[in-house]
Image 1 (cartoon, rainbow, N blue to C red):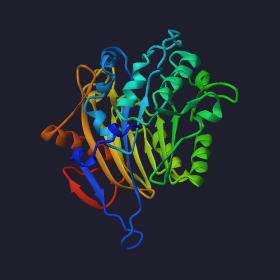
Image 2 (tube, helix red, strand yellow):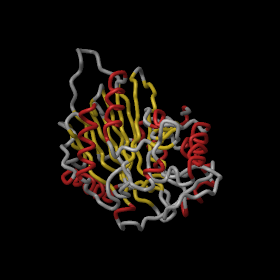
Image 3 (tube, rainbow, N blue to C red):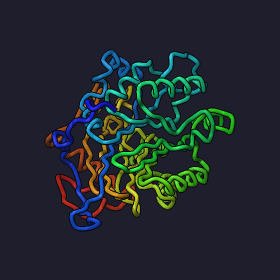
Image 4 (cartoon, rainbow, N blue to C red):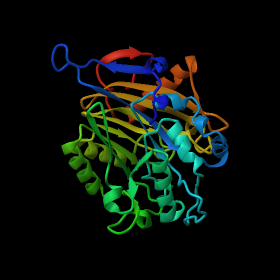
Length: 350
């Protein structure tokens, strides 16, 4: 990511935040922190396709929020390919190469491809997507040329902090044919959670921070399913520090599951329609987590409403307060704890 993407965080302080009080390792010494921003589902179909005429502004005010973090991740729910070889399914998406430029311009470091649209145009389309993203300087995870690559995390280092990021899918669409194999490209499917759990446990051994982005749950449900909760618990037990999910197309709750910060779903960030589950499918946000050691010490949620053009709109004032309160309320049905002791600003998570 270029220096131009890294705007000063002080200029982008989002209200709606909770700061946990942490203990310093020793007087005068403070562990380094890493700030990670997460957005929800992204594609460039329908009305959103027009935004690619100016890739640098496609994400609107969400772009600076993503760019301000040390690392930023979204779920890329479309192949980036010129091929028109649709798979036999109801909803098939595709984006042109400018999509990769838009992702980079928004400061997104890497994207999850573990979802039910990344292979909408087959394995060739998946290969095109990986090539286009990497050419634009955007990493990928959750899919690959074989099962080992699909389950391999994207890795980076920030101020000496080693970070590993996984993507896993638990969505049924063409799952059998899209699953990566020993000699077959595809994605990291996690219906049998054992392999995913082993991968996370292995990454725990040689990384300081382990992040997982699952594609899971039931579309339109604001409360996570029992399957989501069970998988989140297994990921936490295996050593995941942060779990941020996608797929429901609506916001789902966030909070703590033991030592792990879990956000079950962030809704749609860039999407072709606001009408899937109105009005909830138009509500989204950027979740920014400040991590010290393995602990999330601050969480910021910037509420976003998807406009008629598909470009995110950042909510402010009373509308932001109401959106934040609504999001905080989802923690209860997610059966998560509040992020921890801290200073309250405008709303409580949990």
